Length: 126
Image (cartoon, rainbow, N blue to C red; front, top):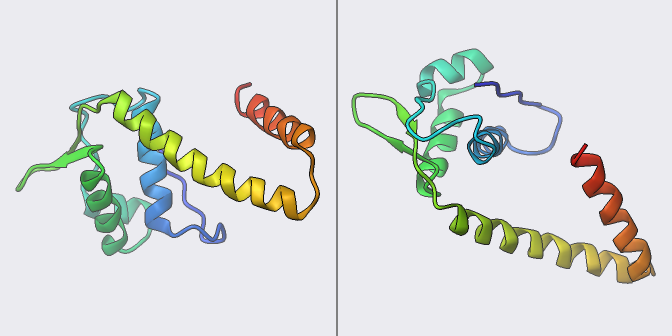
């Protein structure tokens, strides 16, 4: 499992860990039943506090992406892709609302906004 963190990104480290693990689960890189490194091992590999990895794992478990077994490790949980997609759509809608607000403030037209979105989407979809 590859996780890269950045101290200069402005995003809390535990969120960076969560997002990367979620992405790996959603893309199938991590599959149901796969074991995650223990919180202690991951903290050591990333050279961060175990409290940070604990927070990330707790949030992932709360969101239904992993399950922890007492005395054992944490494992990728089977996820309902419809629920995950609905959650993603909600998060995207909130971000787009912010983008539209900024577009109105900057007098950016709908066509310009759509072109930006199209370019960004195509850039990620290469």
